[in-house]
Image (cartoon, rainbow, N blue to C red; front, side, top):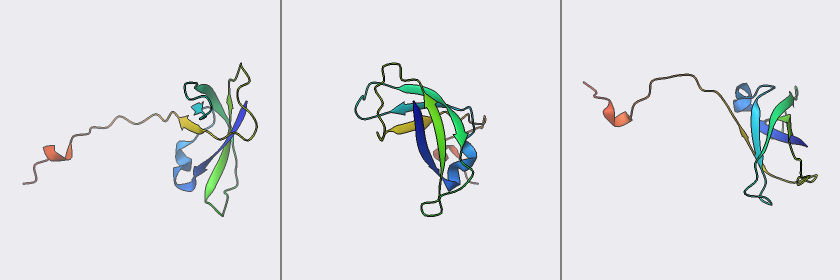
Length: 92
């Protein structure tokens, strides 16, 4: 099934074609539909400052229906960084 999603302009740099996505709908709270981003639009929606992208998710049971709303989770690899709690910093 094809899923159309929108991402805010400030987060565009995190979305790439081929990234893994997990899609969930309220109708099936225990079901996760896995897939990949297939394409990213090239024109920004000027009204809400979002960019639309299309993902393909596997739905072998045909549970997803047209116009359903859901939440999509995108796996974004993070760079290795050193992080420490703010309370550990001694300002001298």
